[in-house]
Length: 316
Ligand code: NAP
Image 1 (cartoon, rainbow, N blue to C red):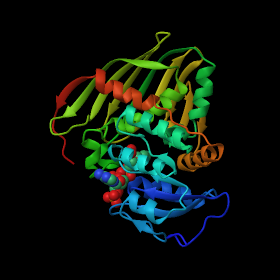
Image 2 (tube, protein in one colour):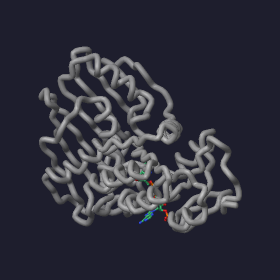
Image 3 (cartoon, rainbow, N blue to C red):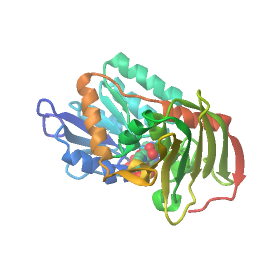
Image 4 (tube, rainbow, N blue to C red):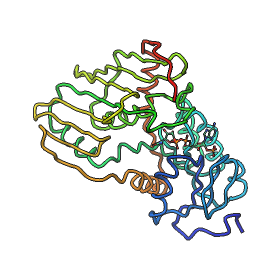
């Protein structure tokens, strides 16, 4: 009898969740509770716990004690995800990774190869791609000639990331933690692009940026500007705008709303995590992986090419 005390009905995916913190409580547990594809079988976290299932202090302890797990969902900060993913893949488990999928591009490439070698599925999830108006924006842009585009992602770090030390450490991405959400949408709806210029503002007492300005260019010479700012109080801005021959497109609220020339085309409530888990079940059953590294590659390029400015120290 497995430690979870239950066997999994045929077709159900027995899932272990790892790194029980803010996003697990806000999104993963509610999405899993509604999803008939899964049985949440165990959790592993140093401090966090999930009620009603066996909890373990580490992924290794969980993998050893609950051998009937089919899959794990890795929700710890990106700097600590690779080793957990590797352990799970080596144990033959399918792996769902929160965004960003890792702290470096090459470690995720390595995991992708390992998943293929082991015959299991690896999912680099990008929740913002599942925001309600993203597909409509993609369809609109595919039908238009884009003249220029701008990504404006400005939020208040004190409001959204209180007491998250990891986010300010090297590998924590700083303002690119939300910024990579914008890039996950931009790389889905805009033509392929590459960075031509970047400028990153690092607080004097931190190892990750609090603001960034990035310029991208496509092969056709379309310029895409990106402004990231983590010190915006008051209204928060998560917008991607494009000037096109069919009008001005604004995808706002992190991909929830779409307007063309000021006329609302789509405005729905989001179901991002329900769709992420549906997609994960789909790739597990199809025996494939879904790992698009384009957003992570752009962040790596911004750090590689970007000019570094030292700005005022940041205190919570
Ligand atoms: P969090 O609450 O600060 O971290 C999640 C959990 O990871 C922590 O509770 C902690 O659990 C574990 N953890 C922290 N440091 C660790 C370490 N050194 N080694 C191993 N485990 C560690 O962060 P979060 O907001 O949930 O974000 C986690 C991931 O989800 C990030 O990649 C983030 O980008 C992504 N995400 C966050 C949001 C959001 O709104 N917060 C939205 C979408 C995606 P234990 O102490 O119990 O081990």
